[in-house]
Amino acid sequence: RQDRLRTVHQHRVVAGEPRLGLGQPLGPGGRLRYIAHGAEAVLPLAQSWPLGPAAARLVRHTGYVAGPAADPLPGAGGEVLVAVGGGDLGRRLLDCAAEAAVRSPHLWRLRVGGADAAAHARALAARHPGATMVAEPAAADYRARLAAAACSVSLAGYNTVMDLAPLTTPAVLVPDTTGGEREQAIRAAALAGHPGIAVLELEALTPAQLAETVEALAGRARPPLPLALDGAERAAAALLALALPERSPAERSPAGRSPAERSTA
Image (cartoon, rainbow, N blue to C red; front, side):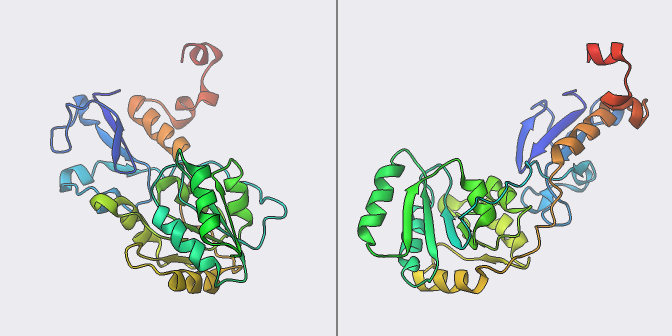
């Protein structure tokens, strides 16, 4: 219920009554809560969205929302997979990666996003002939290739990190900080100490540095990221606990309801 709950999704309010602010009183019955899709031990909400003491006590971190890991694509092992998502951000990273590929014994597969992806991929290949590189538009097999890759190079967006989280593929994260953006930099910094994860700054990045970092990681499996990925289920349980506080967990669960109750839910 909007008068009792607001949901916060990775620093953004995605549901709730906008008239209720972080510093305002609790809703009826004092049951307002802030549910954050995140991990308090790794990247608490307050690290990127400062909260007052009263509001901070109302936050419940329920883990991230992500699907299961994809199966590795047969024949895609040993590649360095470079991807910058489906937009125009990260073109500088692609150019740097194309030059870094010349210095590497691995095949570098550059996935280009944006409306002009095909044209930009052709331009990359033309500027770097003979490199151990394939440049092509973004494609649906990205997650399967990521699971098989020797190393990943990418920005540090939410979806990218969620794709990496359950895998053992080592990764180089290059957060996008254009326009004063801080979200990716904060996320990357929180993961920088994890084995098999390297973080580089795009502004100062050179092809030699990128190639050296990739070669130090490539082919060395890392532990999955220590992130709970069942945030949807946990958030649903928290919602039900707030909406139906008088019921037991079994009664709040769909499996614990009678057929009549389930039919009217």
